[in-house]
Amino acid sequence: MHEKCGVVGVSLAEQDAARPLYYALYALQHRGQESAGIATHDGFQQYDHVDVGLVGEVFDPDDIESLNGTNGIGHVRYPTSGGLGACCAQPFSVSFKSGSLALSHNGNLVNADEIRDELAELGHAFTSNGDTEVIAHDLARNLLEEDLVRAVKHTVQRIHGSYSLTIMHDDTVIGVRDPRGNRPLVIGQVDDGYILASESAAIDTLDGELVRDVRPGEMIVLEDEGDGFDSYQLVTKDTHAHCFFEDVYFARPDSVIDDQLVYEARRQLGRALWEQEGVDTDVVIPVPDSGRAFASGYAEAAQDEGKYVEFAEGLMKNRYVGRTFIMPTQDQRERAVRLKLNPIKSTVEGKSVTLIDDSIVRGTTSTQLIDIINDAGADSVHVRIGSPAIRAPCYLGIDMASRDELIAAGKSVEEVREKIGADSLAYISADAVAETLNKADTDLCFGCVTGEYPYDIEGEPADRDVSRPQVDQL
Image 1 (cartoon, rainbow, N blue to C red):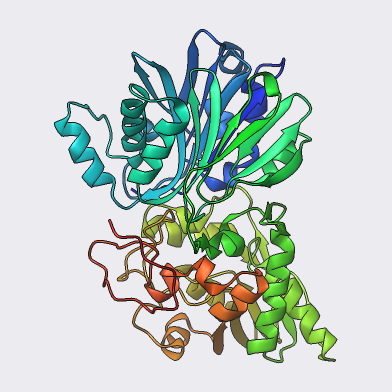
Image 2: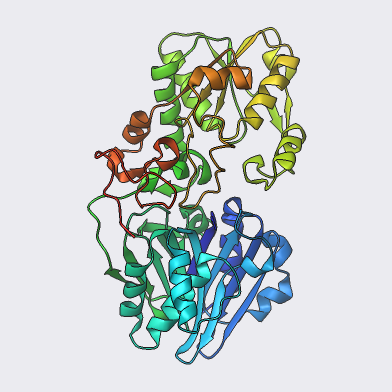
């Protein structure tokens, strides 16, 4: 089950954790709109409230008041292919004789079925098909025999895939990032204590200060009463597999990942896109909102070269329609595009247009947007994309469709251009992405671009380019 979600955990000195967790989840709402949940602990008892819906729908003032304790974790989840509804809402809680355990997970394991089968043979009863429950059961089993750090280390050594976790064992809050660093996780300091979150925007919401990213393979234990945190490097790998799509699409532009502001990274990707694949047109327009930073950098780079090109808004967004990318069915995605975006005719009428977006996945949105702009009177529409062509599924946390649904899978750029109806089409290169993000390409996961993954995936070819990261055998 692919889980592209947001996680948070706090340990505070005096104030209850529920309200700060609630605000932090609001800041991470873009990472998941299907369900939300909070679990807290007051030193004696665990409290939790999880349900389907947006953060503002799941919690009312009475719910927040009922979640006692200065320590807690939270989660937002988006609809994915592995299971919908309240059964998959998190944090996932387990009670056992060594105490209580709650767990929030962002990512996807590639060996969850194997571990679930082994645990089931040992008598563990599962209530969902999610890999989060597998992690929780494995950790709970280890906690029966070991202290917290050793128990977590043994679970980390057993599970394979992408994950950023916030975990609460009784009233102790911890964060864990997978050894490849595929999913983001950061530490922040607030007035009353410390916070772990998927993105720094959640820390900003609490008027906190970003301390640093959690390192790949690192476990952070928040000290009681917000006094600080302890660090344990559980696993070390020679290469990492940071998901480039976090920087290109999923993370909020005002978040900081690996000391780089996401908005500025996207502007620089836009500049690189012009330098690689620029086309001289009258106006550059973004697909709002995700294409805006790319388009700004692209137009600026063109103007720096003396090109007279206008950067303008050509599509007006209806902000009451959710992301078409994460709509669960194709029919919903197609209908949502027309509901979501309307042309500004004065911007495009009689002009050659460069349309800039962060990515093309299924191609449905791009095709309809080109039709909308042409219908508004554009002379031509040239499409430029701030990520490489998406040609393979993601198995590590983004529900990015099968090859049959990916428009670029098995097609040339020219074939995709013809399919979406653009006058020209170009993507940024993977090398330019790596250079802009200040990372070696061997420390980035381009699995959805190249089909080469940092883990062996059942059903995918085992042979890989030797320049890519060492593959973890399962």
